[in-house]
Amino acid sequence: MAEKVERVLKGIAASPGIAIGAATILGDTLSTLDIREKNIGPSLVASEIEKLEKALEETRNQILKLKKGMKASLKNEAAIFDAHLLIVDDQVLIKEVKDQINNGKSADFSFYSIIKRYISAIAGMPDPYIRERAVDIKDVASRVLSNLTGVQKRSLSNITGQRIIFAHDLTPSDTAEIDSENLQAFVVKAGSRTSHTAILARSMKIPAIVGVQEDLLTIVKDEDLVIVDGFTGSLIINPTAETQKIYAVKEEKNEKYYADLIKESTLRPETIDGFCIQLAANIEHQEDVKEAIKYGAAGVGLFRTEYMYLNQDKLPDEEKQYNVYREITANLNNQPMIVRTLDVGGDKLSKILSVPHEPNPFLGLRAIRLCLATPELIKTQMRAILRASAYGDIKIMFPMITCAEELDQLLELLETCKEELKAKKLPLNEDIETGIMIETPSAALIANTLAAKVDFFSIGTNDLVQYTMAVDRSNERVAYLYQPSHPAILSLIQQVVKAARDNRIWVSVCGEMASDPRYTPILVGMGVHELSMGPVSLGIIRRIIRRIKMHEAEKIAEYAINCRTAAEALEISETFLNDIAPDIIDITTGGL
Ligand code: PEP
Ligand code: MG
Image (tube, rainbow, N blue to C red; front, side, top):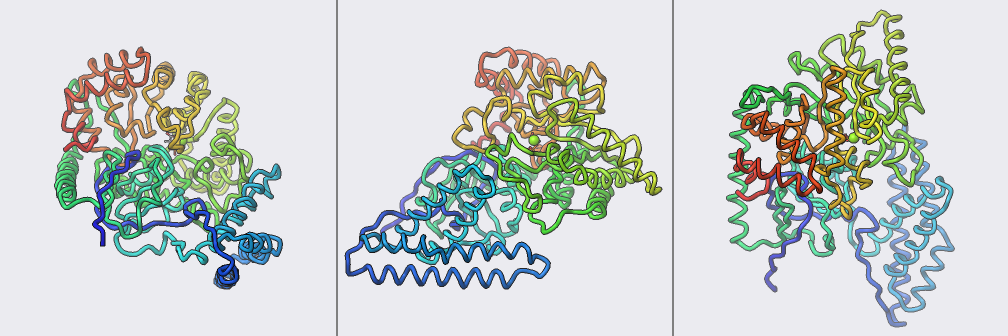
């Protein structure tokens, strides 16, 4: 057998760490299948038609089995499988495929090319309801093609053993479904550093690479030995023995470095000249609190509550949410927790919240827009947060604010909820601190107006960069334009900090910029009070803060804001960082 040749592909480093192991390819969408045009001679026509019929029959049986297996409580949802059966039995479609086979093309190519034409025709329809049917057709088509080609669909929830997953894309719901015990690393063709899938990987401490531009899923084969370098974004396929040795050493050094950082987790995050920056944790799930405490967080700066709504069969009710908030706060030893209200939409889609298909989900009915359209949804959550606030330092925060009216409506709903609870004589903190995320340019520009009504700001740089630069945060093709140090972003942040100061409220940064050491000198120099991030990054950021002098950081921030380009601003900050913390540059760029 020919010896396998080492090959290196580059992607975006999405979650630090090194993993060495076997590849598992998830052929879960139609777009991942590599079906090429194949001509067949007349003698093969009958057997190709037989293959097609067998694949359709197998698909029919699989769908019937799935339908039978649905819980009685999900009877309505089971109706979707009737629609799937109609697709497998569609005589017009089947005739067209058979005609193409009769014209000398293979069964898989015939089915693939015709179904793709159907899908794009439906996806282009003006009626959103009809457009959504494209998803069902894709689902059935993937099944038929799996049966035709023998390339099996794999479900994430039943992956067993230690695996490195390769996929075209993973949604945040997919990622949340994976049992992290079995997941060594993942590599996806789509996405960027601030897509929620990448954020989840960091919080699960799973090395990840996203945005691999090359034809990833045809280059990597199932069971190939691969190395995922989550520091640099390098993917090494079939590494030589020598490369494996180099990476084993890197992995060991990396583990030791992070273990040493944990030993510093009780040190105060203050600059050499005594300015303390609060370091808090971003969490997605209740269980993440353990990690937050382990890495020395001074509370939770962002609880992304939408994960309670993903991968669920029904909406979390008031009681369930109240219990979650109460339990988390009990584990925080009097430290604060900021509960952000539901932020679904964009790349976080929930099956149970029936948001209509939107051409631009990041600009659509996301977060508070959905909540204000269905007030009971957010009132349930507000009541749960308010009730839990009687038992700990809980603050409430609203995402995606763009104008003062939205804030007014939300504050009014919050007051109504307080009254409802008081009428029921349920305990609550009536003076609960209320804050907003500043993650749209409009909110940043009217920060002074908004500050008058709230107790704190939290700058969501992930979205602030996306909306200011007009660049989809999860699109790898425009990732080069995703520039947190762009002069426009830095001046918006500066403006928000000034508005907070002028109105005597505090300001945090909870976007990924807060966890990236390259921006720490700038953010500290601008005067933010708190940085909130995935727990694993806390050690590195604490170490940097403790090596900074405030007056130097202020100068760096001032220089950076006045730069012409993002690259110039970044260079200034990196040069400074290299002087005060060369070890951190080494670890974060994988150069150990
Ligand atoms: C942000 O936008 O920076 C943020 C923290 O919120 P999310 O990443 O959940 O959109
Ligand atoms: Mg956001």
